[in-house]
Image 1 (tube, rainbow over the protein chains, first blue to last red):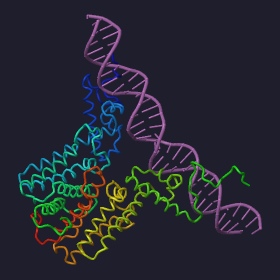
Image 2 (image 1 turned 30 degrees about the vertical axis):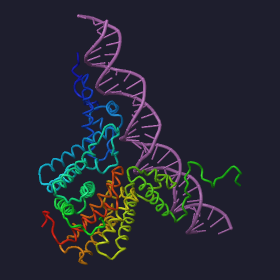
Image 3 (image 1 turned 45 degrees about the horizontal axis):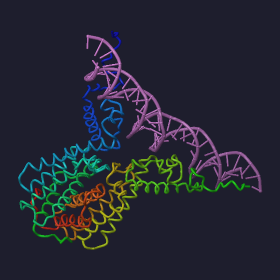
Image 4 (image 1 turned 30 degrees about the horizontal axis):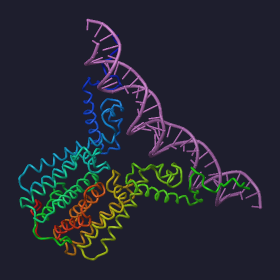
Length: 227
Length: 227
DNA sequence: TGTACATCAGTGAACGCGCGTTCACTGATGTAC
DNA sequence: TGTACATCAGTGAACGCGCGTTCACTGATGTAC
């Protein structure tokens, strides 16, 4: 039936590249959109620089198709970020769990944190340096992956206190905030200012760990204003 | 000559609000553009969210007029940032100079740094949390205000070493990076996550100063891997 | 076994919008003769 | 004193572009009778 010149089975330039999902497998597109959006978002590290149109093109589908699975661009970006936060959390938790030493575990967490940021600067920019909504769009969704990741750090500090490795007077929340903001500042600066004359990164992380872990372990109170 | 219905001297709705500068005072518009751009940029804290058109409207002039004084949007944004960095540097240096104590000066610098960030979150986002170029567009312009600000911190550390307040073995660059990234991380997190259950900010800054200044003053080496 | 119908997975075109930048121009003002 | 001219400080319209989202639609596939 088809003439020699007609090749309807080959993709035509400009035509969608993706075969329509079979009946009942419409949800497959949702997963493909998430994957494509993640690829583009971590490439640019900026959700405002990634358009619905570019995500649709990456999938091989037209822009309106996105709205079959996500209510808005914001909802799609949030879904991607939640997945990325879970990956970040897994990397840090995994590193922390690789030792039983209640001090060394924090050191390994810190190194894994910074390494994640340097290995995946797009992820890190997206998760920690943008202006996205922090809370779940739908309150019924429960804790976000970001909230779980921070809770894991507080738990790690609490364990070190329970095991007697940290001073008894340590406030787990204050200590967690102190360590997190310091390591975040280093990571964010390393990513944002690649032209800065940075010394060896591992030395920087170690120095930071020395400083903070010393304060959490030494019995002597420093000359600070805190009681 | 003018009829009662003609009021040519009053601004008409939609018409430019700004009177044309007198001959020889064309440079005045440059200053007005800088002021307007700074207002809008610190309001949003994001240079991609501020358009040439909105800056022109803020001044009361048409968009092409911007190009009489700035080669591109990038050049205009850079000029604004350089001014903002100078203001930031002045705030921190001023606070540091308010005492002769070589330890207390760092504490005051830290508090002034965080206070600047919280008082001017738009400035801070623009200067430290965006994706702008870090170096001068024209290499002949010499050091940027940002580079001068960091140099001032290194000098402050060096003075504390020279006065014997910091350990002799302290590397001024490493110490400056350590303190800066930590305080930057706290400031950036405070700004980016206003919904986070932050404890008292002054306590956080003090805790951070305690931790870092203790490491720089105590003779005992911590359990770190550094020699 | 055949056929009308419902459902599903998308598409095509358009909505109104804002963007940075360029280009030829205008109209007031000072200057030279 | 009068006037032609140069200069200056801008303007108006347009360039081609991409944006998120909506809406009516299409065409393949399964299902009920």
